Length: 249
Image (tube, rainbow, N blue to C red; front, top):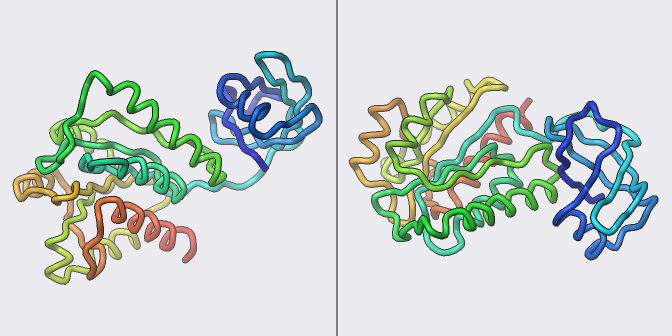
């Protein structure tokens, strides 16, 4: 059943849908009055709802039944990716959202090939956020992950002060056979806590970036014996979090 995020809280008994979601319901799904959809509120509650009225600009829906349970990861995982080239970040955002990421923070790494264009920033971030929204609807998420505009590594370090656990995926650790840090960290991770993990761009993180991260409380870890691409590594991490905190408990 189609899911749509609405700008209302779970104290409401009816909602109004407009904008792109209105056009998706009418033009793409060709729904009519009496059809049912699932509405997700701003506080993460889902409700089976029925379309009561369709006007030229708005759809009015009424709550039929509130749904129980949660589809969110029990910990808040933020993915910080060294800005990669092409559409790799879009892939990370889409698939990372499906796997439960709470937030995405691109950063301008020393080895990032792409040069960030501030003039196109707002449109780019808007597109990323749209990708996250559509992926959240498709994967039955109860929240839309936030997608930030690219920041400097210094700004990233300031943001990191608010996290409970901080890791950096470093390929040199994997090459040297390190295989315990991630597993031990996830075993100790308590539901409700926050995890920030940093991934490098295509060329990896520079030694001075690793030193800077380590000096600010980040612990370097490997992601198994194989070297993963910049767009694959975050998905590996999210799958590992889900396995440890959802499937084993």
